[in-house]
Length: 281
Ligand SMILES: Cc1cc2nc3c(=O)[nH]c(=O)nc-3n(C[C@H](O)[C@H](O)[C@H](O)COP(=O)(O)O)c2cc1C
Image (cartoon, rainbow, N blue to C red; front, side, top):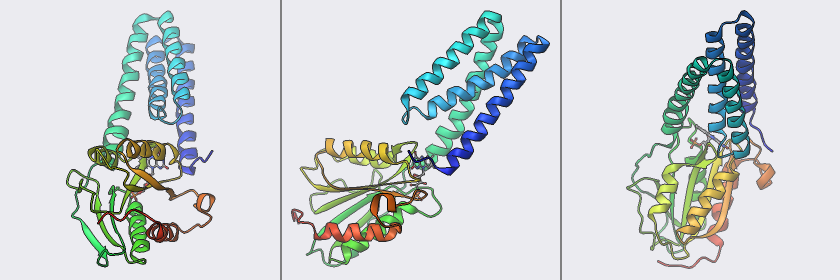
């Protein structure tokens, strides 16, 4: 299983924090301060609940195990002092609340926020084929997904295709009948595909077997997001002709035999242009 290096650093930091608070809890117990025990236990439980919440899409069983451990600790504290356990529960909620507001609503919410852009057209007259690329505009400084889609478009163009590119939003075209190929590009956020792309696919209703290429980008843990996005495409009636996971931190050679993501995407575009898709224009 691939584990990003940032993850190793973060899990080390969280473990160190939990151990420091566990030490403080023991010290509170030693001096017999029930309230200090309640505060330290509340912070530890808050961190455990926050981790369980964050991992829920990735390893649900671990999330449940962590929640059970937190519940067991709360019961143990309640046996010592019911009032302290209520206070500890409030601390737990406060720590989880801070985590939820900063990580889920602010950090992930900002990354998922829909961005409206006009449709840009590149390529020839469209006689060879026409494609629509709809991708999410992420917050990453490199605009990795956008660069990947431009490379894919270059591959299609190199075979004489005309390509319309836009971002996934309420304003992106939902009538895709004039296109031979629909390309979707979504970043992975917490093991889920970018929300704007999923919502866009859900608005398409009936793709009537339209060939669809699904591109999911991420640090290196994209498998679940790919499965989720594919399920939405299939539900909308699309026919998935290629599913590309492309990574920023994990070596792409593992999956594609090539390390340069731009080359991988350019080749994938050219390959699709040569594939015998139904010409609907
Ligand atoms: C809140 C957040 C959560 C993320 N979760 C994941 C993840 O679960 N798996 C993964 O491989 N990458 C994850 N990433 C990395 C992004 O997928 C990656 O930065 C993005 O695909 C880069 O594209 P962009 O430059 O177009 O934004 C996450 C990034 C953010 C900001």
